[in-house]
Amino acid sequence: MRIRALSVTLALAATSAGLAAPARASGRTAGFTDSDGIHVVGVRRVDDRQYALRVSTAALGRAVDVRVLLPTGYDRRPGARYPVLYLFHGTSGRASDWVDRGGAEKTTAGRPLITVMPDAGFDGDGGGWFTDWADPRTRLGPSRWETFHVDQLIPWIDRNLRTVPRREGRAVAGLSQGGFGAMSYAARHPALFVSAASFSGAPDIAYDPVVSVGATGVVSYIAAVEDGVSPDAIFGSRTANAINWRGHDPATLAPNLRGMRLELHTATGAPGPLDPPVPDPVAIGIEALTHVSTVSFHRRLDALEIPSRYDDHVLGTHTFPYWARDLREHIGPLMRTFAAPPRPPAKTSYRSVDPAWSQWGWTISLKRPEAQKFSVLSDASSAGFALRASGTATVTTPAYYRPGTRVVIGVTRGRTHKVIKTAAGPSGRLTFTLPHARGTATALVGISRQGPPSAAGAARAR
Image (cartoon, rainbow, N blue to C red):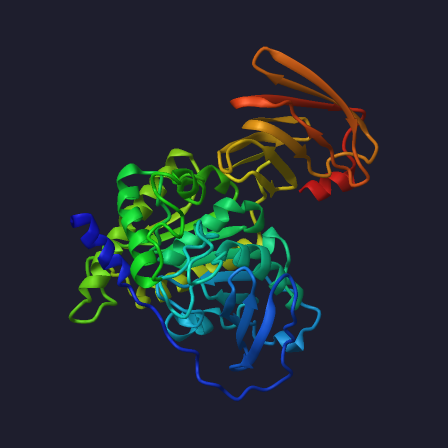
C-alpha cells in the first residue's frame, strides 16, 4: 500500500499548458516540409524566434506538437549553422511547457542555439516514457515514441533547419519523465549526443532492485490512469519483459555514456526558496521519489568512474521554478561543451538488448531465438574487438580501411579458433559473420591488414 501511495503521488504530477497566444512576427518564415516519415500538419510563427508546429507520423498514428526556438537573427545569417538542444517535458506535459512555464525563451535568448521541444505524450496525457511501446495496439495507437523522437524528428530537424548535424552539435535534456527520456536516449544512442541532462528525473527504473519496485508502480499507474491503457502496455510486464525494462534503463546502460557530458539536478522534496508559502504536498512527494532514482543513478556513474555534474540542491519540490533554474544553470556549460566538445572514447564499447544496432560506425545484426537479449561490444577498434552475444552475429566495421584492403580476421571463442579472409568494400568497411554461438559466449576478434587505414577512412570512423 505504501508503494502504491507513492506511485499515485508521482503519477498525479501535471505540467500541462496550452499553446502560447499568437504574436505578431517580422521577417520571413522558416520552411518546414515533409520528410523522414513526418508530415507537417500546421506551422504557426509565434514570434521572431518561436514556431508552434503540428506534425503527424505513422509511428504515433496521430498528430502531435513540436515547439522550436531559433537563435536571434537566424533569418539574417543564412550561412550560419547552430547546435540543437532537444528539451523534453514531464508527465502530463506538453510541447509548450518549457516556453510557457520554464523560461526557455528567455534563457536561450542571445545564444547561438536551436531548441526543439516535442510532445512526449498525447494531448497532455501521462506520456509515452520515451520508448516504442510493448503493446502497439492500444486505443492510443502505435505509440512508437523512440522511433518518432530519434529516427524521425532528429533527421527532420536537420533537414529543415541549419543545424550542426552530428554528435558534436546535439544535446538532450528533460524534466521528470523527460529526464528519464533524455538519459535513456543518450544511453541507447550515444553516438547522437554530446551532452545529456536530467532535471528531477528518474534515470534509474531497473538497475537498483529497491528503486525498480517503485518505478514499476509509477510507470504502471501512469499507463493505467493517465494514459488509460493496460498497466503493462509501455515496457511490458516487469516479470515477463524484465529484459525490455533493463534495455531502456539509463542506469543499466550507463557504460554506454562514456565520453558524454552528463548533468544531474535533484532535490529531496523539502520545501525550498522557490516554493509558495504553502507548498504542494504532491510536488514534495514526487521530488522525494525522483531524488532516490537520481541518487542511485549517480552512484552507478561513480562506480563506473564516469564523470558527471551532480547538483543535489537538497531543498526544492517538483515544480517549474526549480526546473527553470536548472535550465539556466545548464545553458552556459552546455554552450561551452558545444564550443569544445569532448572526443568520443578511443575505443568503442556498447551494450544493447536489440537484435540489430548501429553505433559509432559499428553495426551488429544478430540471428538468435530471443527477440531481446544483451549483447556487448567491447574495446572495438580497427585492430579488433570482443563481442559477447548469442546466436550468429554479422558485423560491419566503421570505414577504417582502404577500399579493397585484404584482411585476415582471427576469431577465438573458448578453445575454438577460426580464420576469416575478406577485403574492405568500396566504403572502406568490413562485413563478416562470426560463427554461431550456443547460449551467450564471448568472441575475441583480431583484425590484421596490409598497411594502415587511410587518413580519409580514419576521419570517417571518428
